[in-house]
Amino acid sequence: MGDSVDNNTAAETAIDALKLEEKDDFVDPWNVESQSDTGIDYDKLIHRFGSTKLDDAIIQRFEQVIGKPVHHFIRRGIFFSHRDLHTILRLKEEGKPFYLYTGRGPSSGSLHLGHLIPFLLTKWLQETLNVPLVIQLTDDEKTLWKDLKIEEAMKLARENAKDIIAVGFDVNKTFIFSDLDFVGKCPAFYQNMIRIQKCVTFNQVKGIFGFGDSDPIGKIAFPAVQAAPAFSSTFPFIFGDKKMHCLIPCAIDQDPYFRMTRDVAPRLGFPKPALIHSTFFPALQGAKTKMSASDNNSAVFLTDTPKQIKTKINKHAFSGGQQTVEEHRAKGGNTNVDVSFQLLQFFLPDDDELERIRVAYTKGEMLSGELKAKAIETLQPIVAEHQANRKLATDDVLDQFMALRQLKFD
Ligand code: TYM
Image (cartoon, rainbow, N blue to C red):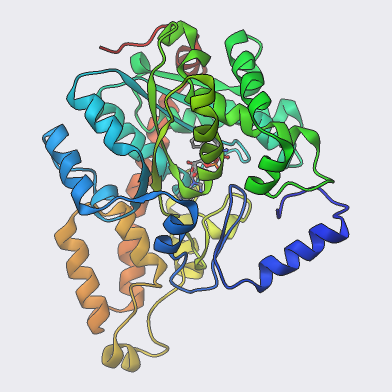
């Protein structure tokens, strides 16, 4: 674990050395690293994690149930894996209730574009499926893992919540909570944490998360905190005592938490939460690692100005183009490693335009500078619009989202 405090034991150091020698990609909730320029091998990851590919058959079924095309994130394989999505589609078809659960660990004042991915899909899911949503802000997790005081983490949670609200969630159907605040207001939350903690041994969390002897005990107990919102009885003011199914959109790095949750669920008499997993939005420097808030140059933040976006992409976005214009015209560029192209895959919804760009770049008709310019002009208005929406997310609006109350659902 890259973030683990200090004083690693000899055994931990030996394990770290082994990890580096491994040729396999490394993915856990804190670190994402691939040896390949094209990034993580997601098919291998599905196999290792034991999830299921989001294939054409389930996409067709999804479209049949909702009666419209799926979001381009699903169509383009950006969301690539799932667990038990069939169950959720059946519930929707039968008109039975379920809810959505997602979250954010407030480690920085602003979200970056990568964080936006699960929230954008969650918003589409909320609108399309017409269901309630709970959003967890794990300020406790970030206090434990980062050099952050409780008070600072709680402040960041409120700031991040404003970014999340700016995505456009429906206040009548959305409850946002910070762990460090909510735990004092809702005994059911803590009661479920304890129920979960009773079901999981230290050996099991060590196996799942790689915790070592020198990790603070708070880290070892924390996975139960992220598991609890997957059980509807954590929110008695929303769901009463109904045991409802839940669907969790997240990037695949969060899956270890929910593998544990799914193990525990039947023992506590709850349905296993379903999941829909996204790939990682790459770091600007290339797909070997994910866009991360801890490296300012790896990320486009939602607070960046148009000028900063332009500079960051021009300076840092890894190019799949050739060394010289002549060589590029002759050989063409490689869209599989080109970060500007990947940015467009996430944020340019027009399939035909994206395909035209892919063909032109691959043939060498479009140059790297032109591709970067297209990425810049696509992202600038998206970030500017987000900033305008965020201004509307005042403290009052935030308090409405965070108030313990009933949500609307059929
Ligand atoms: P956090 O704050 O690291 O990330 C928030 C959400 O963004 C996803 N994510 C990314 N997606 C695409 N590309 C990236 N480069 C990228 N980086 C992060 C994460 O998978 C996550 O969905 N412990 C969690 C907070 C949490 C949570 C949850 C997340 C609590 N409960 C339930 C998802 C579902 C965290 O620190 O996320």
